[in-house]
Image (tube, rainbow, N blue to C red; front, side, top):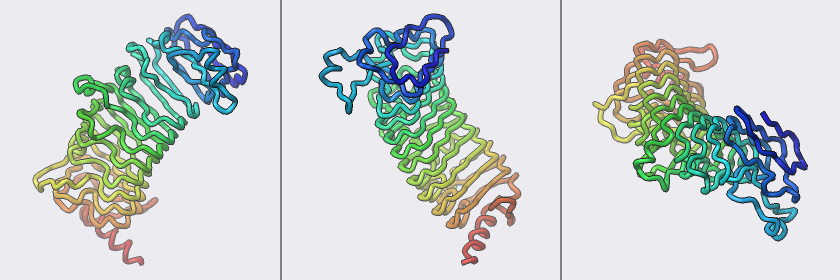
Length: 370
């Protein structure tokens, strides 16, 4: 492992050769004017882990190194020319499994000149603390991440979209991210969509097991209605104030393996499953759901206000706290054969005949207090 720590006058990073090399670059790498082309790290052939942290004076990847003339005429103390750590023509990272890009300021991440064989074994990608990027994974990068399993995006204040699908043909588009198992999205205040709903075809997220979305106040849609979550185990959405509903009925029907559902702090949410005019004969079954938490949802009126029949054959633990407008769980037929009580506060439980009656009695009790 190569670690560069607090290198305020770094002028060169040497070529790396050997096997099982980890490269960790962090804590304020600054490139001086005597930093010549050829002194950057040229080889990523054996690198399995790359961490670039707090390096706001360098671009991680670039297609060329700025010439002396460009540095001399365009560079200034206020607007320095950013030096690249890696030249794209020379680095494809064929063995890289983990890439962490953390608190690198207003630098760029990706450039379209990436070799097509870049990152073929990348499993884990973390992007944190970038100021100016609008899209985390552009379409030209998406084409290369065949083996990505975990995605972690945090504190990127300008990000509006996680995945960009424009520019991908439908045949290849549906095959992308087929191995992605876990997604964490936190503190993305400008995020509106994971990807745009008007894309011709969605992503293949059928391997996804965990989706956590926290503190994304501009998010207006979690996922398009075309998404299928056949293997999703955990869905955790917290403090996404612009969401009026969580998922569409078609997405809900695909959640056949969901075990944990937690929703909280979303002040605009009115229902969990959107009302799209379903008939009373339409059934939505959450076969594996064991734990459901509805917490701090001041405008939630019901789980769903439409005519769907809901079945929760495995539900055993349910929390409903600080949902003052929730009058009923669902107006249509519903079954919860294993549920025997509802947690309404720490060490406080209620149950009256069935879930709908319990929720309605809690509503009356809350409003009788005022």
